[in-house]
Amino acid sequence: MAKAAREHKVITQLGNQGHSADDIRLFCEWIWDGAIGNVTEIHAGCDALKALYCRIHNLPSLTENHEIPAELDWDLWLGPSGCRKFHPTYLPFQWRGWMPFSTGCIGDWICHIVDPSMWALDLGAPSTVRTEVDGDYDPEKHGDFYPSASTVTFQFPARNDRGPVKLVWHDSNSRIPHTELLSDEQKVPGVGAIVYGDKGASCTALTAREIVTFFPSPWAGIVPRRSRAFRASGTISRTG
Image (tube, rainbow, N blue to C red; front, side, top):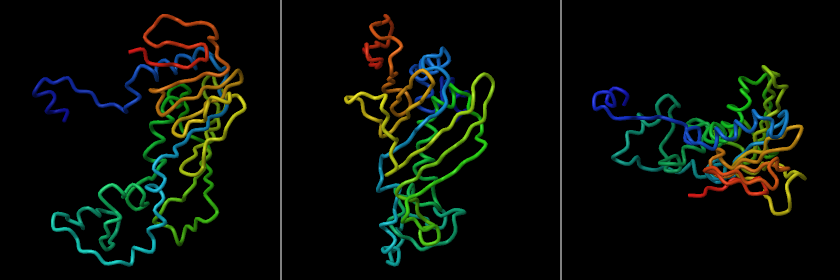
């Protein structure tokens, strides 16, 4: 692609979706400016496509026999994952919920949802990682599947001018915990993150592209004139 772009003199950009948007930069600037103080904890997660990412309900059907479609090179599709008989439950899209073929919900989503925090806090690599899953998950029996609920805790050591940070990832039936800092009208994001500091918190939906809310709002009663409008609640909304 890079060679073709040079040959045809086409301006080309490859980016991680929200990482190329203005809002993530604005979010970082607020964090760097101390809008919520020193960040100590982050809760991020994704509750989308639960039936896709947990395919345990398909276990009984794997004994079925199915013809390989003529247009599919099954051995090529399997690649290095190991031999197994064809079953339509694996593809074309459902492979995302099978451990031999994918990294599951966390692999699909954490790179987008935690990207604002990684950038703003320069988290680097964690010192410890701990995973908890739902009680019905059996790694031996369900080894090809992802659990119906996962909670993964990353501990990041202090770095540069910031202290240590705990990041907790929640997916599928493990939801981001509600916080008393939210009002009755504000909801915990199903796909997003809450970033906690010692002076407040920030709630981001998805990759910080759609909505960023600070509470308590550091701009109460102030509406700066710029391409993003800050309401008194601290919520950002696109103006055009």
